[in-house]
Length: 120
Image (cartoon, rainbow, N blue to C red; front, side, top):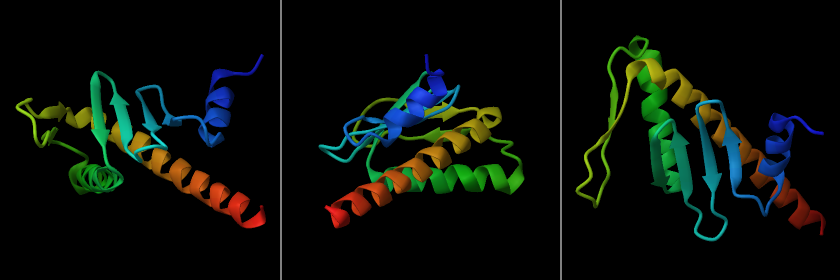
């Protein structure tokens, strides 16, 4: 029997799997059809474009590096009447780890996909 983290890592590298990266606090999925990302962090669920993921990653990284993340992060939801999502300052480092891991796995899967196309 495989450990769950190994099974998840194998699924993340499978081009047909939507799973990109996971931590204890959340999961990032990537839809191959539309290219959007679903970020699940604690009770927060966001559907984001690749550009939005990069922007969120930069904002979270800056908040963590600036002052040890002393203020919560408020994420607005464009095009909806939903109130902004608030990520407590104490949780920003965990969100940062999730976003950085997802970015690394997405880059790796892109490299592997490009390599398989060029050698086919």
